[in-house]
Image 1: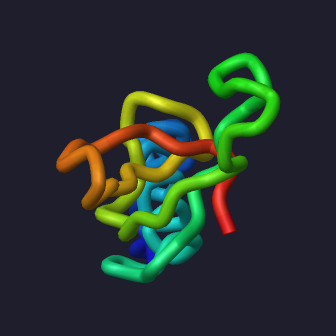
Image 2: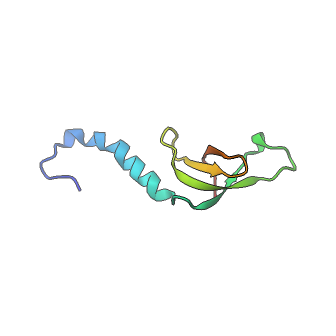
Image 3: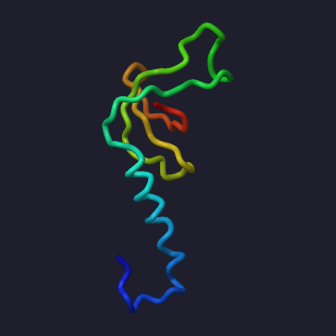
Length: 82
């Protein structure tokens, strides 16, 4: 909650923190997800997704989440997952 004496002129500076908070709420940490592969990044008969675990929001990307893929032992940025 913003203090009553806080100047409205600096409220725009709150946006990065608000966006991080919303992204964190949107993704549960450690949740098992299926990361979908786009048709451009797979062959026609390849699996359409891979299992992984959410790590948290991808801060450098809009509405994306960092996902750990155990089979690849890598962390990737995902914008489409379930």
